[in-house]
Amino acid sequence: MKRRQFVGYAGASLLTAVGTGVIFGSDSVRAQTNSLSVQYLGHTCFLFTGSGQKILVNPFRSLGCTAGYRAPKVGASLVLISSQLLDEGAIELVPGNPRLLYEPGAYEVGGIKIQGIGADHDRVGGKRFGSNVSWRWTQGGVTVLHLGGAAAPVTLEQKILMGSPDVLLIPVGGGPKAYTPQEAKQAIAMLNPKLVIPTQYRTQAAKDQCEIVGLDDFLKLMSGVPVRKGGDSISIQKSDLPKNGMAIQVLSYKF
Image (cartoon, rainbow, N blue to C red; front, side, top):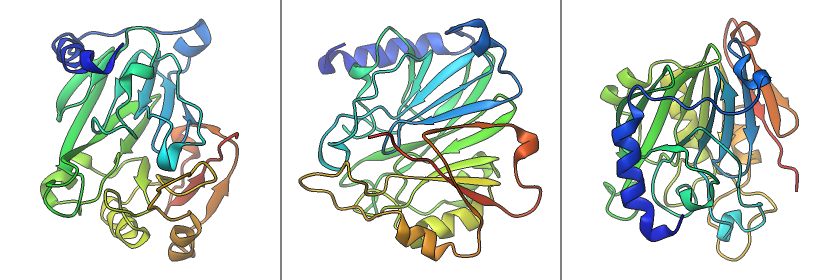
C-alpha cells in the first residue's frame, strides 16, 4: 500500500472495525486464550499474539533512531498506530490487508475491546508533533497499555480510561516527542502496572540524527524494581505477574 492511500485505507478500516474480527494464523495461535505472546520488533513496535489475534503496534520506517532495525514486515490481523509519524505509523510496510485503528475511541475487533486515548505528542500542546494515541486492550487474559510516543503527563481523565494495566509499554528515551526517564517514572507511579516494558530508547540501531538516550538512564532511576532480561519475545500469563509491586521486563533485539 502506498503512503498516499493511507487516509482512505484507515477510514475504511475504522468503519468496519467495530464488531469485526479476523482470525489469523494456525490452530496454535487460536489456542492461546490464556496467555499473551509479546515480540519486540524495535523502537515502539511490538507484535502481540493471543485470543486468536495478532495485533501489531507502531510499524516504523528504518531511519534515524530506527535505521539499524529491520522493517517490521510481519503479518497481523489488526494494526494499531499511535501517530502517522514515520517511526510509528508506517502502515504501508505491513503485508496483507489488516484492520487499522489510528484515532482515539472505543472499538471492538474480533471480540477484543480496544480503547484509544488521545494526548499531545510533545510538550508544547501538540504544536510540533501533533497527537499521540495510547492503546489499551485485554488479550490472552492480560490487560495491555501501550503508550506509544507519549510526551505529555497523564491527566486524570486519561488515567480513568487507562486504568492500572497488567503490562505497560512506555517510552523512556526522551527527546522532543517521548518521555524522559524521569517523566516515565512519574507516569509509571500514576498508572501502577504490574510489568513495565520500556520502549523508544537508543540502541545500536541509531544512525545520523537521534535525540534519545539509552536504557541505562531509566534503569538507574528505577533502582530497587526487579529487572528481568531476555530475548526478543516473552509469553505472559496473568498468574505469572507480580502479586505485589512491579517488575521491569527488558526485551532485546536480534540484530
